[in-house]
Image (cartoon, rainbow, N blue to C red; front, side, top):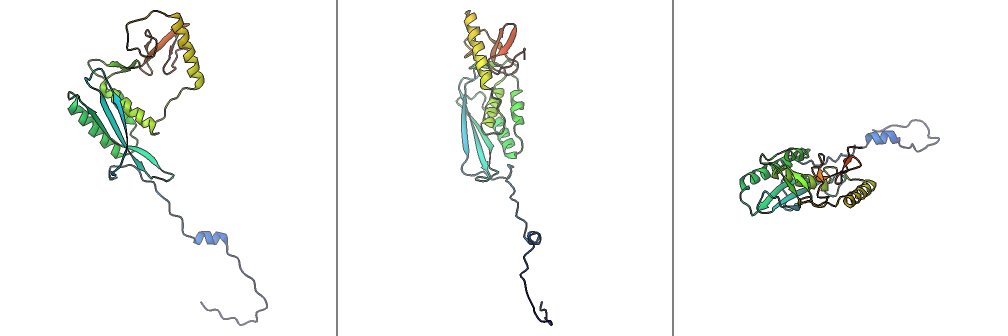
Length: 231
């Protein structure tokens, strides 16, 4: 727009820009929305995978559980590693049908996205009507499905989707001292070769399902997770 100046110019000054007005006129920065896991994300050609081996006494051969993860929002502040699919391989064919069905259902839940940690509780709550078994280390498993759930829990903790309950160094030292004192005062051995790394006459812990509970000075204490009836 042209403005006609009719008066004589006697001086001038440069008007500084108003920072508030400039900020209001500037275009708003585009917010980067992180990509969330959902069933419409196309499977990439390369996935990060981890394989776990289990040898349950109820199966003739070992089972190899492979969990593949997809990396979302790579090289950004929103980078995350999410489980995408699971495979279970074994020479044993007796569990073939339900194992294949289980892997397909779990993989479908993984690809659906959202909070998948509920799977751990659901799988670990499955009980075998014929009774469970003790795995190496004296940990009780109510069923083979529950042990598969334990593997998934271990993987989710490894990639940061579940928090791992770590004992402090002080607690570990106290438990080691209690164990040494207990073993020194109890020399009677049993034929229970499944007790593993804990005293053979230890009983099962109701919290971590491990045969690691000893009684000293009238106090029942678990040498595995530290749970104690005496606080």
